[in-house]
Each structure stands twice: as structure tokens, then as C-alpha cells.
Image (cartoon, rainbow, N blue to C red; front, top):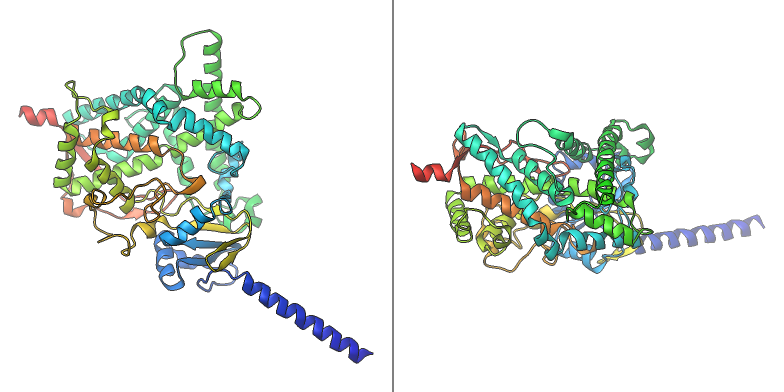
Length: 497
């Protein structure tokens, strides 16, 4: 009897063992580097994860599994792998893993970047498309953005007269911030001097810094209650500041409307109208959270792209001259550059596209998460697996780009590759349903800044062009290691001389 029990037990054990092996094979994850106990592949990443992951993918394949602490991630490093995730399995891979720092935002479950792709998300995206990114709405609000550029030009003229150096990245950040604030609430929120009126610049920079830091609580979730690096507490202070400011904007606007005073016609007016018509689906909390999203998403990436574009143009005088010549064809008799006409300048846009290719603001797209078990090529990825898309690796892949490390805007005059998510070798804004919704506005903001910098000024560097530091630093965005500083010389002064 005991022998029979032993035989039956052995048969059952081997049955489950074989079933487990076959199940494991059917659930085969992509290959990847062997990691260390507990920390996994953390030491493989280094200070520039996008570059390290690109190198690892050459050995382990276009779809690769890595383990960071207790978090398992699948990394896509080629256009075909990205298409498999962002197009063919868009819905299944549309989830988000929310960083611990973001949970400090009071209503992070209403933030368009982090909310699941559900009915609430579709409601918010509809509001964004209708009241911010639709071409007609962008045209309606362009005078607000134009006024900001005029203020920037006044500042640069004064700086030129004083022969003062200008930090182009900081200036571009302030301009992008004021363009967003004017689009949303019809007012400037920061100055172009060192003083940060209102504290907006400080709050945005704080969140960009803490949200971009490596957070051990994200890879070992058991540590989240401890907040060991004080990151969530720092983020909470800045998010709470934003919450108070946006609430004040809304309350002041409501009083203005109750007094029957003329409408501003900006995005806040439109969002309040939308809320009144869809009160159950879109309330004041949605508006507050959306305004915070816009101030954060609409500044750092635009200013980074502008700074890198100016860096490349100052390194390549013939390209600088070609942009100026092209912009001059659409300048009015009053000397102003009209935003609407900039959209028809092919070489300017080739420069901006090439800047976004070679100097991606977000080298690793905001991480996705599998909502269900999903088959990617011959692999099966479990539900709740983090997905990383290395857009930086694709934009520099020599199989798709001739001389990929060379800044060559002409390549975008010779092909139809665009940034709108259909050409997976170039996805600076992502692709699929999680693609950045602010592309049309961001592109106009960057185009107008670069055109204005180039047309109105010559720029004197404090050093030889050959000494330009082209290194970058990885964070929430990829920024220049050394700020771009130059002295603006108004072209009118040069012509008079």
C-alpha cells in the first residue's frame, strides 16, 4: 500500500513538474542579461540607462527582459519591437506603473499621463483635443503666445545692449512656461530675469528633478511607506503648491464669470464651459490636475529641444544662415514672425526634427504596463509587466539612419518620416493611444522660439565652437550637461554698423 502511494505520488509530482515546465515554456519571456540576487540588473544600467540598454539589446535581442530589484521589465529597442507593443498590441500594453513620487499629487488618478486608458481618460483627451491641440483652437490662441515672444525679444535686446551672456536653456524654459500659462490662464507666471515671480519656475524644476531621480522605492515597492530618499515628500511640497495655485486660478476665474465680465477666451474658460456641460464626468479636480499636467509637460521638453537646436545651429553656421534666410521670407513689414506662417518652412522643421532625433528629450518613453497577458512575437509577457521603449536606440540605429551620429537636417527633406507615431524609427512623442497629446502645441512653441532666436540675433559664444561640450545628463528628460550660454547681438545693430 505504501509502495502504491509512493508510485502514485511520484507520478503526480512528475505530471505537475512537466506541466510546470511546459507552462513556463509557453510563458517564455524574452531573453536578457543574468542579474545579481536582489538587485537584478541595476549595475548593468549605469548613469545613462538608454545607452546601456541599447548596448545590451545588441547581445540579447530587440525584445529583452531585465530585472530591476523586484520589478521585471521588457525592453523594446528596434522599430519592429516598438510597433509590436505600441501598435499591434496597443490596448494590451496601454497601462502605466505609477512612480512613487507621482502619488504625491493629490489627484494623480485623474492625471492624463498616469490614468488607465478608460472612459475618464477618453473624456480628458477629448477636452485636450477640443480646447488645446485642435488646429482651430491653436490658431485662436496664437496671439497670446505671440505676446510672450515679444516680451522675450525685449529682454534679449536689453541683454544685447549690455553685452550680457544669456543662458538659452533657462530663457527657453521661461518662454515655454509663459506661453503655456498664457494659453491656459492669460497671464505670465515667471520673468526672464533671475527672479522667479510667483514661484512657478522653482516648482516645475523641483518636480522635474525629483521625478527624474532614481528612486529605490520604485524598484523595491516594500520600501514605499518609508520614502527612504525623501523624494515623495519633496514632490508633495511642490505638488501641493501647484494645487493651491491652480485652485486660486479657478476661483478667481469663477468670480470673474459671475461678475459678467468679458471672457478671456483661454483654455481655462473652455474647460469651465466643458465642466458645466459634463459635470458628472469632468469636474474642478479634473481641471486642476490637467493644468498641473500641462505646466509640467509643456515646458521642460520644449525648452530642451530649443536649447539643443540652437546648440547645433551655432555649431553649424551654414545651417544657421539657411534657417535665417528661410524665416526672412515670411516676416511681415513690421518685422514680426507670424506663428501661422512658420508651419510652412521645410528647412526649419527639418532642423527641429533632426534635433529631436539626435537629442531626444525623453530617450526612454514613459513606461507602459501590460494590462493582460500579451504575446509579443514568440514571447508571452505576463500581466502587470513594465514595458520600456528605447526611442533613443531607434533614432540612432544605423540600419535606419545613414551616419546616425551626424546632425544632418537634410535627411528630413529627402524622406517623409514624421514624428506623429507612424514611423517607429522616430517616435519622440511615442505612438498609439498613449502618444503625447500636446504635440501640435509643443511643435509650434519650439518652432517660434528657434525662428525668433535665429532671425533677430547673431550669437557670440564665450569660447570657440570646437570647445562646445556636447555631453548630456539622463533624468526625467535628457538635458545638456553644460548650459548653452551666448551673447545676443541684434541683427538690426549689425545692419546699421
